[in-house]
Image: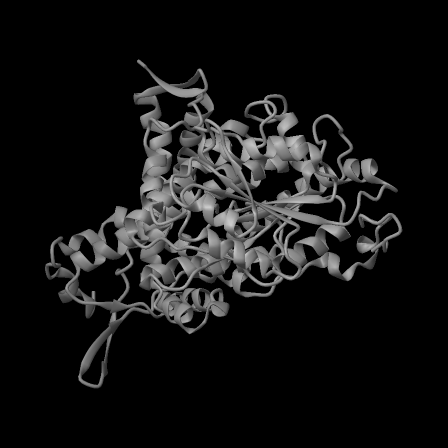
Length: 76
Length: 504
């Protein structure tokens, strides 16, 4: 099993080291790993600048009439 | 995120009082319990499904061989095990897909209501408002500030002075004195502003504002804006000018909300809250000011919006017909935002309208404040049910619920490893992931200054803070789900006084 064996077989602080070798622990670790990766994706998305595709489409910004409280206000 | 009521030196006391059961808030409905069960249940279900899906692929994390290197005098163990590229990509893609899905759906819903022409269901939709105000000039924009105050002699003078120093200053300032027993009224009169004293109000801030608005609203023209502002709040320079500019440029705009930042001081706890607010402001900026909540700390409304809300209560939206604020809502600003959104109103929180809000001085005060916000938000969702306009708020609640599960399982895993192993093993892949999170924590509070960045860089304290907020969230959900059921309370009004009747 290699170098890790004597360390893993040794007792942990409070729990037997067999805990970390069990199937349910593996499932918990996999669940946490997937979650961590998902939140990593979201963290990266939060760091990157947000791009609005509509900014590059001038037609979308053109208004049909003025929104100003002044009836003769600018249309855009 | 919401602000709280008439803040002051006894804020902690007030927060606690608001959480007592005998204080009137939204009467429990079947929906309220469903909210809790739905939010918690669906998140647990999602987590369980994911756990079942990944379990067969799972291998114990220490199955691979840890290696040993010497770093100076230390022996360091590390394990190069890492997930496959495919699972990394799948997880990241899945998360981004959900986030993008929520964002796209929210935009589609917003656009649909923006273009709505349904006069009955969405009387505040831009097209309807524009049609009603076409070719009519209702005069230039004026701003009347309402300051609800309950024994605020310590800060009311400074608040009035800060308002008068705005360029341009508001046209009118009205202190809404609610059951004041101190010098608030005297100080306000001395400062030369109007004072409106409430009569027999038992509904705190919301009730006081309702009384004042009932008198004032009929006389307001379309462009005579009303601002509601807490007595302990200081507006940043340019707030009123920017709001007036926006309201002048867009007659369909129904409300402008303040973007709040935390005040200085209160140690590390204060910094945690400031970081949270800085991230919130950044997020709103990235949403181009699309509002989550029109904060009760400082928000400006067009009279048409408030009149329509009052007229729609009891018909299209919850509450008493004719009242602007729903007096049973625990967080009245969150409720008013959902009300305006439900009626199709256009709102914005622009970066130029910033306001400094107080931070809680102790963990207990923070607990009480957040529990109130949390309960209030859930109760409001229960009252409105699941509608297109509340979709975003529901998904936020689900997100927080799932996040609570994710953070707690992560901590359980780390704890188990610490307790079961007598040596620390580094996993380079996960250390790299940790660095990504650290970068995110630092970059998102960059504007908050070096203190904010240092706290962000330490990662784990902020995780602890997030965990604290998660516990508050769980408590709020459980309260609304279980305690309501155990002790069924019925709120009724007898002779103008609210009476709480216990039912078995």
